[in-house]
Length: 68
Image (cartoon, rainbow, N blue to C red; front, side, top):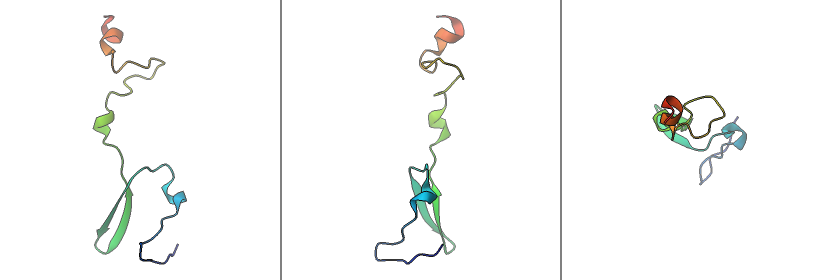
């Protein structure tokens, strides 16, 4: 795909960004990269500790592990 560079820059078609909430734009060795920014997996660690219908296992894990 070719597109013109305007005073504002370049428009990236939305279909290329489906499901992406944030991108990083950088220039490496003359190549311009638009890279999706993903969440740090460490921040999501423990948010879904088990695959079950239980919705509060990350907050009340002792109750489910030890019956307390």
